[in-house]
Image (cartoon, rainbow, N blue to C red; front, top):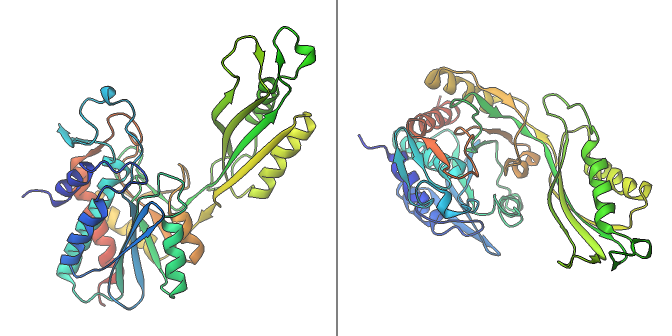
Amino acid sequence: MKSQTLDLTCKLIKKASITPDDAGCQSLLAARLRLSRFRIEQMRFGSVDNLWARYGDEGPVLVMLGHTDVVPPGPLDAWSSPPFEPNIRGDWLYGRGAADMKGGVAAMVTACERFIKKCPRPAGSLALLLTSDEEGPAIHGIREVIRVLQERNESIDWCLVGEPSSRDRLGDVMRIGRRGSLSGHITVQGIQGHIAYPHLARNPVHDLARLIGELSARTWDEGHPPFPPTSFQVSNIKGGTGAENLIPGQADAHFNFRYSPAHSRDSLVEAVESTCLDLGIESKIEWRLSGEPFISQPGALTRALREAASSILGIDPKGDTGGGTSDGRFIAPTGAEVVEFGPINASIHQIDERVGIEDLDRLSEVYESVIERLLWPR
């Protein structure tokens, strides 16, 4: 029998939904969910599309959370096949978003369809929440939808996020929390001058290099179990005018902290700004907090997921807080239990991104089993 999950994943990959452009993914999914009598609400904030689809009126509420946007494919000639043309080679489906996370979204949708067909009157409500702003700034996505839901007193009890959490085989890792993410844009001020007369100028590139050297060499903490150690990374540096004989007047860098609960936004800000002062560096820093660290205490969702993974995959997922951030950071503060569980993440954001074809069906089965364990009438 043809795999519904594979077919839906292929249809989603064909849509070049580079963040924040949804490219019609959510309309496709909304049309399917309407056939299962989900109530569809499309919320657009700025240039971002969001979809809230709910089946049922009563609590408890289980939300399946995902995103339809993807990162840019990079150089097209580096791909073995066009990134937005799904390609099956051997046991793998290739295409941008195959693992992150159109495969997970497709598995959620097909799991919901099968469950509602078997159980039209669940013991609670089942919902899907999708955004096209997860891979971008994440300002007009889930953050905004949660604000709307809270204003009308719609609560979430459990949230299962379909992010690619698995490391070596499907189901070996589930995310039970995430580190915080704090980004900074620093502008270091210097004094422009002729490169042959450095005593009449001040080179901001040298100052920036000293600062980066100091911050990157520092051990920020030893970790905060179950969180890994805090890390500092520079993503972009800009300095100079292009002229070979000119000391520039300023230099810029973008950097990011992925931090454990051993730190807070304020402690990291203070550490960086005080280091600038200690080094005598004149600078201006713009800060952006993407999310604080969070962790969910194990409850009914965690138990249901462990039982489903054990039964279907023959594995007990390891709880983990590594990786990047996810939209779960906007759900956790509401008090919901948040767990992430999805495909193998080895190829995400890479050239020739791929997902295991068999894993798509098995992931959908796990999701369906979790829904049954939480919402089947007793």
